[in-house]
Length: 538
Image (cartoon, rainbow, N blue to C red; front, side, top):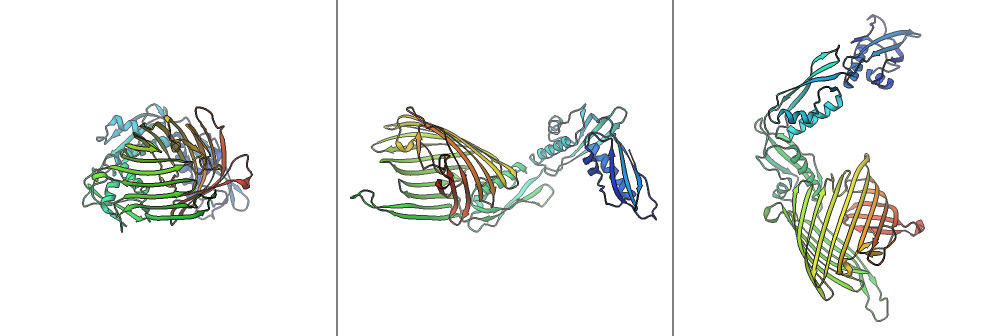
C-alpha cells in the first residue's frame, strides 16, 4: 500500500530540500532513501512521488516484506521548497507457504526443486530465489535446452497470515543441436586441430559447459594470441544452432640465443663457451605438434630435446617424449622418458609412462605417473582458479631411487587486475644410490628467490610462496613476492630460509621473460639476486 500527495498542475514544481524516512528497519535509512530514487535538490512532482513509493515497496518485497506499506507527505519550506516525509510500516516478513511448478518434464520436479532451493514454510528471499532460477536455467542449458524460459510469479498472498504462494512456470523450449561447427582466423592452424581441441561436432546436443570448456582449451593451448567470445548463431530451423569460434594466431616458433666466453679457471684447462640456446615450435605445420631443443652451458651443462604429439592417432591422448643429459659437479646423468596423457574431464588429466636413466657407469629403468586438477581460467596469466598436481616415479636396476612430489597453486582476483597467487610444494626422493642430479634442490628462480641457483639440496623439501600481482597485459604482470623453504636429508637439515622481492613477467618476441630481484633477510637490499627465466609459464 502507498500514499502520496498531489500538486496543482498549474503550480511550478518545488525543490526537495530534505528527505526524512521513519519506520525503516529491514532497510537502513540510507538504503530506503536510495531505493526511492529521490534526492535533495531535485524537483518534486506527483509522478516522481508515485514512482518513488513503488520502488520503495519493491525494495521491501525483495527482502521478504511483501505486505509493507508507506505514506509520503510534504511540508512547505521557504523559496518554493518542500520537505519530504516518508513513513514506513514494514510488518512481519512474508513466509512462502506453497511453491507450485508447472511445465517441468525434462528434469523432473524433485531435481528442479533442489536446484531452485524451493523451501516451503520459509521466509521469502529475493536474492536466493534469483540464484535458484539461474541454477535451473543453467541446468537446462547444459541439457540441450538453452532457450528455456523460467518465470517466478506471485500466485496468492494472505496479508493477515503473512503467507505467499509462488508459481514457477517453465517453458522448456526445443532441444537444440549443433548444425555446424566453424572456425575463422586461422592461416596456419588446421581446422581438424581446432575440432579436436574444442571437442564439439556437428550433430552434438547443445551443452553450455562444453561451449565454455572449448573456449578455455583454445585459450590455454598457447597457439592463439586471442580467442574471441564464441558465437552461437541461428541454424536452419528452431532446433539447430551454428557454433563459430574466431581466433587470432600467435607466433608459435621462437629461437633464443645467449652466448659467452669463460677463460680457463686453472692453467692448462680449456676455455669454455657458456650460455643458452633454445629453439621451440609449438604448432608444427599447423598440427599442434610441439618440439623443443635446449642447450645450456655454465656451472651446469644441459642438453634437452622434447616432443609432444597432442592427439595420438587422432585420439584425445597426448604422447610426450623427452631426452636430456645433464652434468653437475662432475656427475653426469642421461634420461629418456615417454608418457601418455589422458584428459579424463575438462579439469582432470592423468599421465603414465616409462623412463630409462643412466648416471656415470650405472643405469636403471622405471615408471612414472601423475594426476593433475586444473581450473585456472588462463594458464599463462591466471586471474582465478587452482592447480593441484601429484607425480611419482621410480627407477630400479644399477640405479635405484623413487620420487614423489605434490604441487598446489591458487589464484584469486582481489580487485580488478590485482591477483593474489599462492604456491606450496612438498617433495621427497628415496633410494640407496640416488644420482646427484636427481636430488631435490632449493634456491633460485623457481624455488627460493634471493639465493643462488641450487644453493641447498636434500632428499626432502617443502617450499611455499605468495605473490601479489598486477596484471599489465594478456601475458604480463608485475609482482611482489615472499618465498619460504626448507630441505633436509638423513644426516642434516637446512633451517627454514626466507626470501622476498619484486619482479615482472613480460611478453617478448622471444616468448615469456620473467625478471625477479630477490633478497634474503640477512643481505642488504643492494646485494639481492637477479633471477632471469626465459620461456616461463606459471
